[in-house]
Length: 311
Image (cartoon, rainbow, N blue to C red; front, side):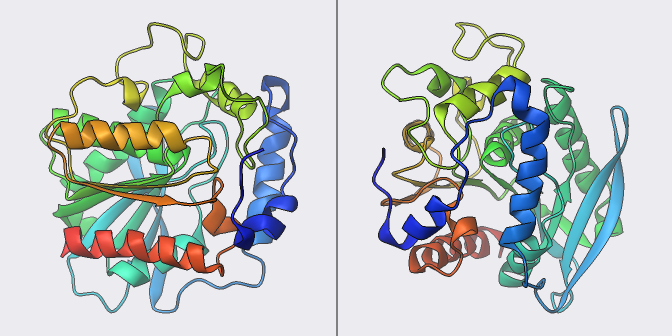
């Protein structure tokens, strides 16, 4: 088992250790939702942030958007297109506690789009939905009171991996970004078949669950020599010209190695990178233990990056 930071030991013990398999995806969606509700119990969204439900036209109908707008910020505000996590198979775009806090701390309007989940909707459904949502923000900025020239894409876990893919696709379309915020991102399907990682070694999100997530999303088995173009961000060869990146991950996170490798490749391609590696931190540690000092420092590192690139 990996070494866990002392501040996180109690929180990690409360997390179920049963890996996600293809047969358990539906029940794990319910478990994921229940855990999310427990983590925010007794907490309130940030004061001074308006929360609204909106929509954007998508490839298969309207796409739901949850919008978090800081009321004290002058219009137009910067905008953060935030992509939720859940291993490509779970999760929701509604995250009032965390995202209202993000809007309040940065003065940016945070727009959180829903996207279709695997296995019911494999690649490229999520990419198509997210790209449509983000392009809508650039075409209809007055509707949201935002400045599309000051946009960041970001997300956690699978959302971070999807944000990395969005940064690549937006660069290809010459749509400008100020930055990409990749919070312990799920970047590389090949991690799911590494021989040197034990199946359930990592807390919260392990190799077995990772194989399930990528396996539901991709048309070819995880680790296969060929995957569809743009389906796996770490497989993109040309990383030049991408927006400045913040990448944060813990040493006890399954994604540590792939995230550090991606940061090094970005730097080699001439991209500005801020890499925040937290000793002993597990996957989603700042959500499990938000009051821990290492969690507070992690959030502030994110916010500092966002304030700098968005001002």
